[in-house]
Length: 168
Image (tube, rainbow, N blue to C red; front, top):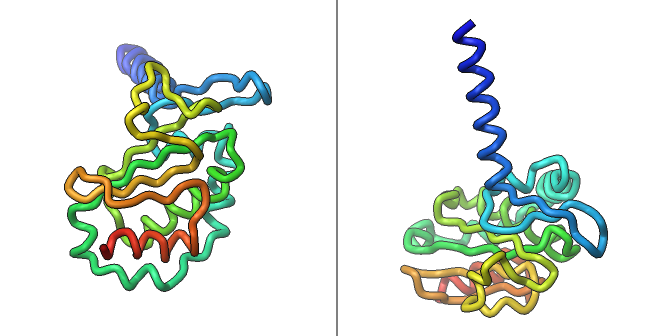
């Protein structure tokens, strides 16, 4: 009986913690769930968002140009991804970008994922200094200093734009 109680408590606490991370609210414009706040990649596979994230990830074919990047060039790189789960550009580009990062074996702990509302804000305005005008915005840092960004859509391809930013 004690084991059953412990298992139920563990399940409940896991569910509560998961909800804190996901920060799902209802979008007033569309009346659909919207992800807000700092979140993990797992939040994108939630049943509310997985329909576009999973298919976008699976259907994207990584351009082989990405393998031109020397893994040593990636050592001091970190990336912040600002997206809107309500945004069609984010729905198109973010799954593809994650597939590229996976192909590079880029460490998950070097990726920050920020889901913003339609005003491109987080609760508390913690991202004002990022100057986000359009989503998605992929901000690439080397040793904490911004070295470039891909805003809304790539100029060429995600792979080529990322290579150009990191090689410089």
